Length: 196
Image (cartoon, rainbow, N blue to C red; front, side, top):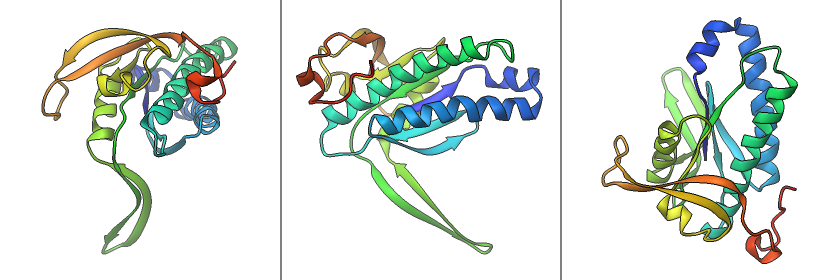
């Protein structure tokens, strides 16, 4: 899952650097709690965006957890905007989700200056999630067709059709998440928290 603040360049121009740092720390700290509560982990913060991974053997369970977190991030953003509305313009976050196999683990960068160890995920799955996030606007949550078919009936989805994504071979079916879970019976999430 990639989460990105929309219009961050303009926001950086409007706010002093210490205030922009406060915005990132305040909002992303809330997102960190949400991701962890849903069984994921934030592995990278890239300026105005973050990458979260939901690992495990079941793509269905990982997808359900990630989608739940995405919806809760959108709601938390609205709540923070109400609470902090006098400090800055409303924050809008766009989210892209994709599921599948990736190479995940510790990567060591070795240079003449020394070593740097990072926990990273590489492969098409992260690339597609990043491209979906870049495609999203005005607070959209976009998911790939592959992920959408893993969570049938759990969410209200609107098909946007196949889209060509930068540096991705072949079109990717894209769906927009419109609403909270359609069904919250325990079997829908195999006992996952509903977030309510």
